[in-house]
Length: 99
Image 1 (cartoon, rainbow, N blue to C red):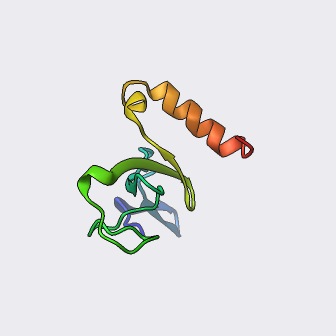
Image 2 (cartoon, rainbow, N blue to C red):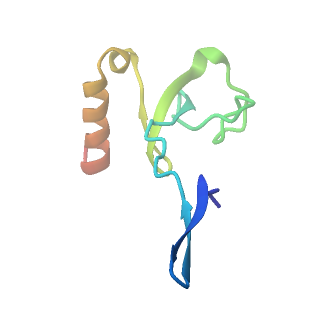
């Protein structure tokens, strides 16, 4: 549970109302995961493919964004230079299942 930033109270005569102030921000940055380039399966910290159960070398890793559970958009060199292209492709993956 979140901790309050400030605790206090408002008093109106004989009525005392307790007040707690909480932060209202959260991180909206995308969280990228390492994927096996061959089958786009997520890689654990030990760099073991979750599908095959075998160790994966650094040369076989790619980055991907998980937009739904088990569904990834793989980042290529084109995405690194063009954020609009990445978000457009992400929109297509989320909304156009037949592509």
